[in-house]
Length: 121
Length: 109
Image (cartoon, rainbow over all chains, first blue to last red; front, side):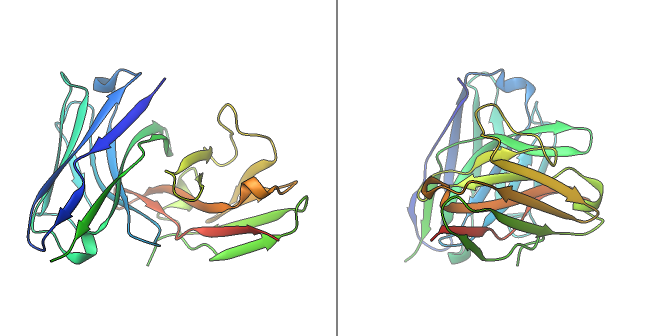
């Protein structure tokens, strides 16, 4: 059974840092790209960042570029999101999600339960 | 402001049908498959439809998807109280990112 379990969320002051983790199991983690997707309170889903299967390529939404860093440790089956210079607008539930990429298809077949990041003084 | 446009809400009585539209452009829906996600209150999104009209194992055939040009539609027939949720469309965009709609809340009257 595929499982994605996020951790590391919490309360952080504006300008602070936080590292999120996503522990994966039930599939060959090292062969899949992975994403972070967030959802602000009462809002829709927003792509945050993506990383290819071996960590050699990373991608970011403009809103987090230069402040967030995605990485992975395939030996530990774990995805990370290092968040810095946090702003009030970064407050959200952060989900890790596994994408399936097929030709012109791109969808997320598994999602974690999410971890809440609260940015407040 | 989401890249894909969905109506904020739709509603119908139990047993009826609802449809949810998702409008995009040639940069996204027009050249890529569309997926749909169901988010029950307080839970993570769940894949409902992929590649426009395919259902993952375990998703009942009351849920259907279609695409035409730069728009897509999710249909739910035989509406049940358990279908009350937020529904999101998603696809790939030429800006090299996944994009989503703003979500549609389905209410069973």
